[in-house]
Length: 302
Image 1: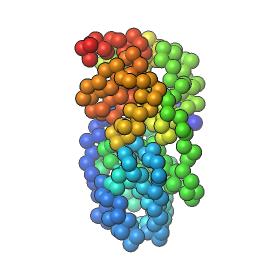
Image 2: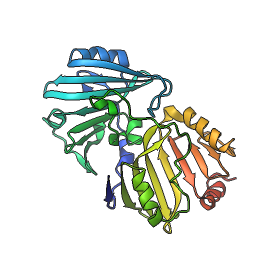
Image 3: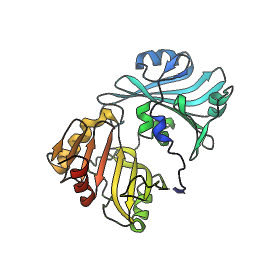
Image 4: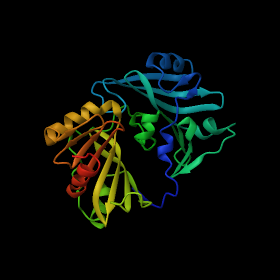
């Protein structure tokens, strides 16, 4: 596990949410249907195998989750060792590739990648590359919002077994609202694949520091969690999710907290204004009681 500490001078990820569906290669594009992709990949790959998941946990799948595992994928710029194409409700949402990806995806390009953590990013194409790991991701806008460039689909490995899926349906217990930053450092690292600490720009009067935790398990999938600290205390947390899993999240929140105390088109608020299901932008919001009551009055006008 490693921890990144730096100040983001430019917040890049919101810009990525505007990325459009782009060609992967050989006329395969994000949001293409499963059957069409499978037919094209069979002419390019040494082998193609379909894995169907009975109970979806992929954030961009509402009712149906499928993965195409491809080996020895031939492209005009060389052969990629292994790729996984992930589909939500029959539409391509996520592609991850490993082996010879730098040459395949960058050779002949005239534009310049932006740097973000360990990634070279081509915003317009939704393309992320980690040269050290020799892995590339091509993502839909929803997958970019959920920060799925930090998720290496376990089917990318020779083992066809998915990672052990947690059956926990509650908010992760280590996210203790009101806890001090120094006491949260250990639990955040222990429950994440990696973290980085960001000094905020002052636009949020309630928080000065944000710790971004990648790979936090919630509802059986590794998530990005944004933990915000004001006056050195954890007072706001954002859990990034997918729109397609909104009903699964709603069921989990109802089971944990009971009926919401407030509902409108964009929000459902639970647990006495301490937990929110955001619907206009897929996220779960956790708030310290004092902050939640402030939002109740100032933002929700209740």
